[in-house]
Length: 255
Image 1 (cartoon, rainbow, N blue to C red):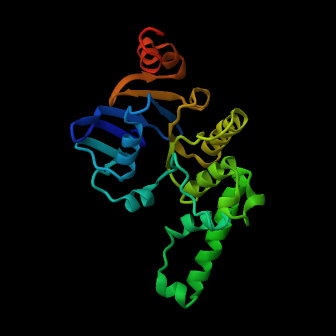
Image 2: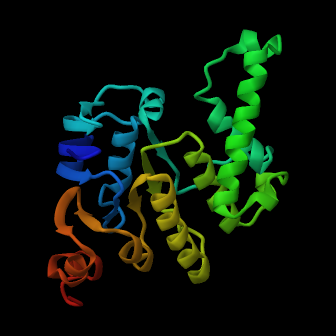
Image 3: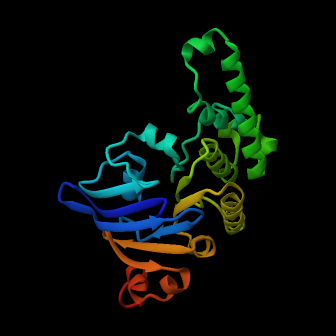
């Protein structure tokens, strides 16, 4: 059984068919690439998996159960986390605070316990800080823990967003263009980091990115979308040489 099963998903916006009978799977411990030209429907599929948007038809199953209609926060508690193409950090907070907020989101305490500084609340606060520092160490950015997120370079901010997503202990991480704004050296460092996260934390990933060097290096399986349809699916070697994929990216004449 796959960790994530997407089957027969359709979604339209007005007269535009954004997704048409889309299917893809992510198994435990796997990094799957989702690629395609601009407007292919990749972000729409991400939004459906994470609960931002509902499908018109089809099913999304996670850990064996359907999550269609389930609110975003419940999906997060089940183990689905994501990053965004446009950075969504809290710029005025420190790096450590950005990550601790993610741990706090799943804490078993409320406003009353926090206000009275009850022992359980203090314990959860320490736990959040320790978890956040451990993830920052894994990301190699612990020296930035006390710096404001807004003051960091794009490359470091990308790592902070990845760290924050990992702080909720996800089973599945949705990565929406994590290499956006990175140079080639930073992109290769990101590739190594993603493999390390998969191997050390056991996190499965669904990765959307236009950087083919990143996708081909880290993904065991790749699904290709074009105009909302799956046009190819397979390993990196098959996708790299698929004439349909080449045509979708470069045009018929170039292919």
